[in-house]
Image 1 (spheres, rainbow, N blue to C red):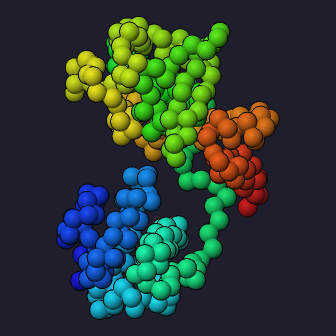
Image 2: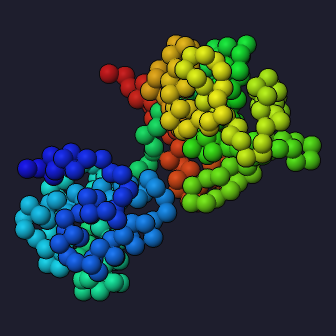
Image 3: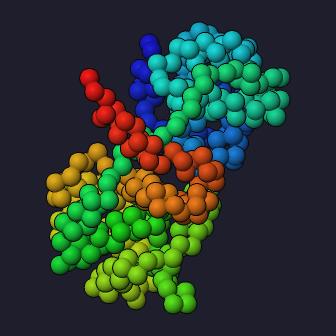
Length: 327
C-alpha cells in the first residue's frame, strides 16, 4: 500500500490529534511521552490552523512511510528522513514544508526526552529560490472592467463591489477582508479607515481612499448594516440566489467563489483570484516609484523579499525583449 492510499484510508484531517484515531501509528506505538509531545507540538506550539493541518499531514505521511518499513520512532536516523524525502514525488517547496514539519516535530520529541537527537536537523533539500510569485496578475484595465460589470442596483451587487474595491485599493489578503467587523470600518479625523486582523496576530490600520469609502458607505446604508452591532460581520452571505443578506459572515472561500462569478459575468478569465489584486496593486505602486518600504507595509509583509515576489515589472521587460527576437 502506498503512502497516498494509506492517507486516503485514514480520511481527512479533523484536528482531533488527541484521539487515538488521529494519532499517527509512529506516535501511538512509542508510548505516553511521545503522545504528550506530539499533542503539545500540534496544539500547544502551532497556533495557525492551516499550519497545524499541513504539519499534521506531514507527520502522518512520514509515520505511514516508517510503518511500511517497520521503523520505530527511536530508530529513525537522518538517512531515513533523507530517503523519505527522496521518495516524495512532489515539488521542492512541498518537500521543504514536510522537512520543516519533521524538524519541529522531532525538536519537541527531543525536549520531552522521547528521542536523543533530532534526525531531521541535519537533512537538507534542494535549493529553491522564487524570483517571482505564481499568482496571475490581473491588469488595471481588467480590474476596471470587472468593477464596471457589477450590477449595484441591489445589496449583493453593492456588497460585491465593496469587497473587490477593498481587495484592490488596500492590497489586503482575502482572509483579512473576510474577518472585517462593523467596527473595523470607522472615521479617523477627516478620513475613513479599515482595521485588518492579519495572520500571526497582526492588526493594521489602512486609510480608505475617497471613492472606496463612498462605495462602502453606500453598501452599509442600503443594507442596513450601518447601525448593526460593532461586532457584526461587515460582509454577509446571502440565501442562495435570493439577494437577501443573512446574519452570517462571508468566508474567504465565499469571496473567492463570488469573484469567480463576477469574472465570468465580465467575460474575464477565471484563473484570477482575490490574490491577483495584491499582485496588481503592488506592481502598480512600485512602477510609480513608491518606496519599497511603504509598499511592504501596505501589503503587510515582514520581509521586503516577499514584496518583491509580487513585482511583475521584470516579467514585462522580459516579454518585451523576447518579442524583439528577429527569427
